[in-house]
Length: 529
Image (cartoon, rainbow, N blue to C red; front, side, top):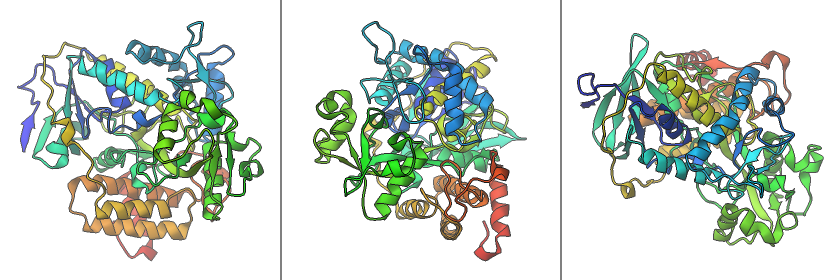
């Protein structure tokens, strides 16, 4: 194994950031001119869920809106377990982070007076979604950040490196072990006392998802295997309106369409959400997802009808969704769009404090791989990009207090970008995704979850792939957390416990050792972790 970044070889020990999405790139830029090394399995920006985000970033920047209103909406959507202090911190720093993004070249929409143009999304009491050309925010943000990172000499980017392990000594981080050539090459050991995990969520653990294949929970499992505390692992958000066109990942029909007045109908033309919630299509995401799921499972199907609310202006107002539809042979100007719920965002993850610190000294985390408490049981729309930039900036500020020195002019350590293509799911990954969707999806119950956990444990027992250990660790943590919470709340809905219960109105925390102990206590499984 090759050793890199020993104390003797660098004047200033670099910060290692695992992940090339929004949180990782933003953190690296905020750390400049301190030396930073970004390790990314895919080319930076390409394997990031942030690039797929359509609607934008939530921030109270318009007249009539306030930070308190943003906090109140966040708390309400989070279904009783949002950490209000964290939510307020996030909402308070939102405007500053939007202006940072403007400084990096993100072309947010503006009105004729030059003010930021905002739109409304479900469960927001005000219009506060800062957008780019209607539905191109994620792509535009990532393009701007990638360009800025590539022109920042303090940032070294090593693409095609899959991190398999975090190394520790006496409870503190000492570095990471990675494998080159998209995980197929030799192992390298990189030393650092400051490691930031920014590896994204877990959507690709599910058979239908809006997330890229890189979002399969490896960073979360890696931190768990190193001993880090996890939080709220049972809460998975399913976006109600992914295009049901049999693509992986599933293209997304942004929530902003429903904000513009698009309606949900079944095969009979019935607007079914009005029977479920007085807010109809603008009810919280978990409610809408369950409504659509019920129609699909009943054989009536679900379609998003934009023909009246958007109509002829669809190509200009929502060019990304329009392209997805046309690629699938659908004209959204004149035809309803078939939709289905898809795993979209993970509220759980590595437990961090307000500064992005984990329970392991020197290990930091930001973005979707974390659980800060900002989202509770159900994330408010467009708070995801906001959380990523707010807490990655806070990590940089905290690490930066140790002092920053200019980096040497490092050459980029990467492999050919054209060689970093997805090879599709292995048979065991396909089995895991099918299992997670069947047992830990939109609707759950104890019997199905126990069956799912048995499959996860069998896969774990037979696994020989070091990187897949991290994926299975994350899946097991989701399974155990979902079984432990005997109620329905936010993104966690159980038919055997369909109501909220007061004794469960709190966040949940566990380590991988806790999960193993739970499995060991379940005699009916007749299996051990």
